[in-house]
Length: 424
Ligand code: C2O
Ligand code: CU
Image 1 (cartoon, rainbow, N blue to C red):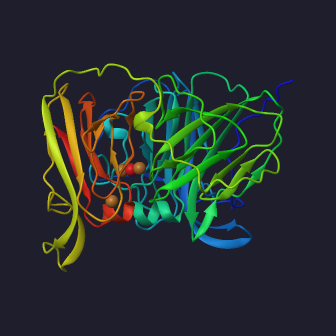
Image 2 (image 1 turned 180 degrees about the horizontal axis):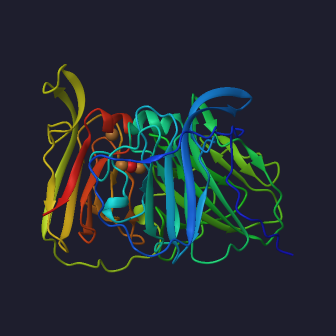
Image 3 (image 1 turned 60 degrees about the vertical axis):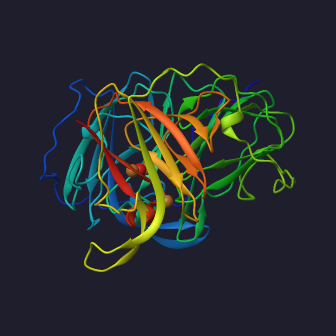
């Protein structure tokens, strides 16, 4: 008999209830009313951002939390829903927004302060509304002082399903809060034969290594997009970049299974003792079945050279993370026309990994270091460009607006590595 289990966010600290604040005002300021769809919402949520104390591994930790918990509530929807999320800021002095990481919402709902809206200040609120038309695993996080804000806990999971849950469907949002690893380990027996989907989400600023021990599995989706013809893998680890998501699927065997993150078991169905440290790592560019590229020509190509350099333009000189020799806000915007097919060449000339993230679009990976991607088409929103690597990716400019294009090591983004893609 298959055990059917409703989704449960794998978590974390104890709740702490946020005290009701003063009556909220709508965020004022720049007023970018664009792109709000008129349809009545079918899924409504309220997220209140506030300072909180949460309990992690038996310790009280000062955090910034949505609804008193880290991660924030798991938001779920079914394809076709109109999702409305009311964001309230109780007492986060530096302001809050909601960015739907990997969800290609209309520009006015994208949550980038100073670009698509003003930051929501204490006592204010802002309504986001978008149609849930892409199924898959995503997450949300503040984009106001995002390095500090996300690190302190202002993030959560967004899952859009094509229909009702079948089998066991778990989310594993990995995060480091005050040096402590989330989520807390969880053990749950699962009946043999149950279809299992594990949605792995990396909400940190650096890469994590995931290993699923005790079963064969397939990688069904990356960054919310289904892969074509994923084959069965055994004793193989996956590396998930900052911001990235992998959905692993398998049928529960009669023997226990465990998911390890950097060697630490976070989910298991029983005791498993396997050394996973020596496993090979999956190369997603060579996994699954190839398909012809949807475009044969490119209207425009941009090159982004990632490096380090001195930035002398501010009040104080700083050692910045640069793109084409410049640091934010001095990196020229990339200008495209609607419906163009655009190519990015990203060259990492630095000594550190840069997890690249373009808002509002998924990019198709064409090649890495001159070698064409030969596996399933890979439509990514977050990908690690390692030192010395050159990635070529492409997308259709089909979502007008002004979009952040940045490194998702958020400390790097803060230290200059942010630019914008703009429609003319
Ligand atoms: Cu997940 Cu601009 O960020
Ligand atoms: Cu970076």
